[in-house]
Length: 344
Image (cartoon, rainbow, N blue to C red; front, side, top):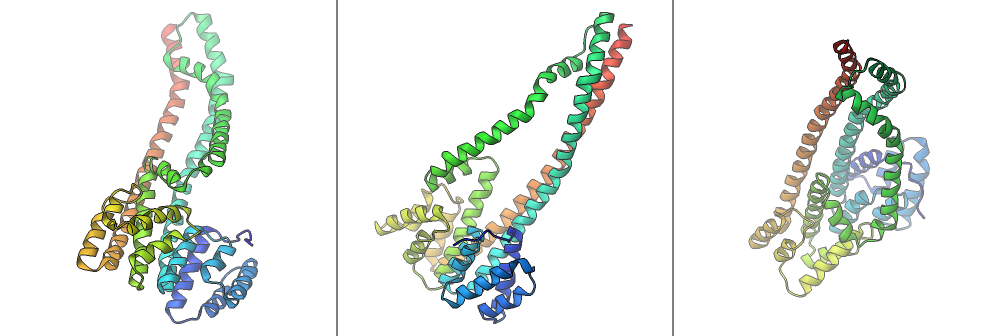
């Protein structure tokens, strides 16, 4: 039975990283959990008690963390690590990636705080302009028989649009929620992933991450002594990831029919285009596990580089938009005054 998790995603990532380090230094799993229990807050004591109890009852670690409602992607790292016998590596790798991901998301949130505050402030200013200054300017223009300038006309038009923006925003959120709940969630996992990959920028990151994750875990399973068929079969039975369950069931059937792994990957739109080349080289020289491992490291660096590039673009773009808004407010106040002076 799943509990409501007390763990934030960053806390989950840090926890499994520490657990991986302790296992790497020779700690048994139960002792490592006891050691980490003292470093966590008291409200998580119940989780540690449950985890240790379930481990002693024979549950694997990935199932224990599933019961604690850890993120499915983190649990999947552990599931595959248990299969190829290198749990400490899987814990450290999963924790490192998700810790970096949460740090990047925190940076994005911090970048958005100032623009959100500014939007709230600007909304108040526009309300004052429309309700106080704009009627007075319009009266003066009408009295003096002076033609309104473009800025004033735009402000007059915005009088009808701006009040409706909050309602439009709420209706859009409700529409997206209903669409996801009653349409998107009912789609085949492969269809869901194709839709997400079609989203600009986000789709690129999803494809890179899926390729990195698959190459990394596939490499671990192969290096642990499993065959290609057995490794793909393990992907197809992981209930934490419906996408891989469906996809690898198809790959498994294709392998049974005698198709090469390279040709199968060439026809799949879910992975980076270089994956078939890496697989072909790895099979040709008999070191597929090593090729996939190096390729996954390259992809991880590529993901981090692109995320840093996106963050560098977001910040100046935000400041540019803020500058445009501030200048627009000044023009909205000053230009009508200059037009009136010219009409006198």
